[in-house]
Length: 387
Image (cartoon, rainbow, N blue to C red):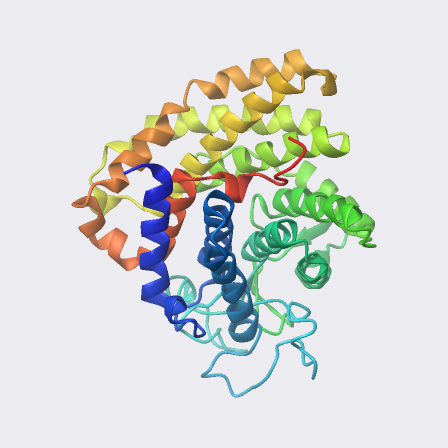
């Protein structure tokens, strides 16, 4: 069975578990997982030209907006989070819930770190993933609504999550309440500003192709400054994957839109190289399945596929890079670890390992990200034409 066939099998099982296969609103929705799932369905459509897969992606988008754009079923509040009567016309205007089973922590309720992981609210880094999924849908369908919704989400999220310190510097909350009125976790995600910077550039660049006015200039400036003030280095496998995913996106933006991102691209590759070395020293990949989190490791393998994309693009479009040699040296250091993608995928493809508690407890996010890693272009490739 090749990777494309495996992708179809995994996404078929996901559709059955969540109710999507019956063409009804899925009973299980989780914003991060669903963002990757949308891209996977679009990749299946790209590979097969089967309209059913495109329909699945658009159905999932509609379900996410209809469910996660509304308050939790157990919440005393009802309707669209945005408060709009015409919420379906602007489904992302109020942001989107995470999709956790438990209600968000109530005002005045004591903070419980362990319980907070199971509580609802809004995560900024989940919202940027959804912006990207909408962006990919816009490219495939050529429907400008998806870009508009992504930009509306970017503006809403940025305004709510960004705050100013006494010295005038800007920071971002990591988690907000469903209505975006109060922080649930005040600390800042290490790569949230970086993700925002690349995602905003992606949205505005593609919006220009649609002749759509998408002014995110002030937001881009703010997240650029924030991202530059925080070290990118991490030994977390998912964090490393996000660095490399952003490297793949930055490379495409350089080529397609001549954006000045070469220095950032080199920094992303350098940070990933150092982080992967530390990650391997910890020895997580030598643990049994019961002590590993598949979706975090698969984030790294997706990113390593992004490294392959960077190499192919750098070689094919060398004339578009002023700092090609510097980028190439940084890329060579990361390319030593590309085989880790196969190592991670092979481990989690073993049926015994998919019977572990850690796989079963997170079966949707694990399986969807495995599918993305096996067929990553639907998620990684910003534009299907021109590259």
